[in-house]
Amino acid sequence: MSMLSQDVQREILSFHSLNEILKQLADFREGKNAKKLALYSGHDINLYVILSAFGIITEDCLLANYQGEVQGKDRPYPNCKYPKFASNLIFEFYNDTKAPYVKFYYNDKLIRLCGNNDHCSYKEFIAFVQKSYGNHNLESWTEICTLPRANWTKRPQVNFDKDLNPQNIQEDAKAFEKVEAQTKYIWLILGPIIFILFGLSFVCVLKRFIKRSFFGEGSIIYTVKEFNEDDEYEIPDQADASNLSSP
Image (cartoon, rainbow, N blue to C red; front, side):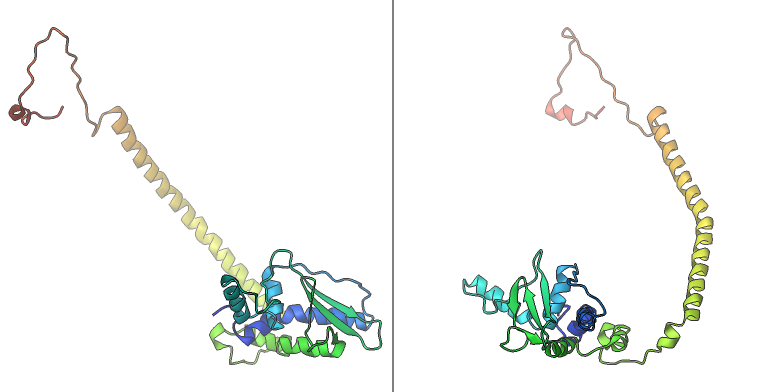
């Protein structure tokens, strides 16, 4: 199971990005900001989350396109492409008309989000995007994300006044400072002990090395005898050679 195989995963992961886009359009529409261009930079997964929420990229279409390429056939879903380096999403907002509308591009290719039309009316686009992230708001998003992954079907009530109360935050900060201070005291005690044990181990190893190197403890001494050409010596036969010991 991939990270975006469930609807709730696509909705939750795309919520903030898509909500930010709607906010930009609404502010421009209402005259709250006069920005002509809003530019966001991210990773491939950020684009993938939005494209997955829009239904442009799915696991099935990626697999079908891969199988088509392997078999030497055309890609059955030409718009279903995982975002590569320098990929981009463009939301064009036409607000100068009586009926404002939005166009959407993926890597400079127009993508039809609202039926066969090459654009969505402003209201249609808002409805489409909100449906893509499950019509969540910040409260429902928080409720889901405070649960373990296996428990997403249940949504407990979150008390924002209690959890985000400044007094509780201060108490948590004091508790953290207390734990941090205790940790420092522990290291003040354990640090010298660890240092002493390490020093004793080093001394023992050094002492054994000196004994081996300078006093011959445990070492093997080899004696080499030089023979002259005039010396006579016998080479033992095979039977006698078995009784010889190595020097």
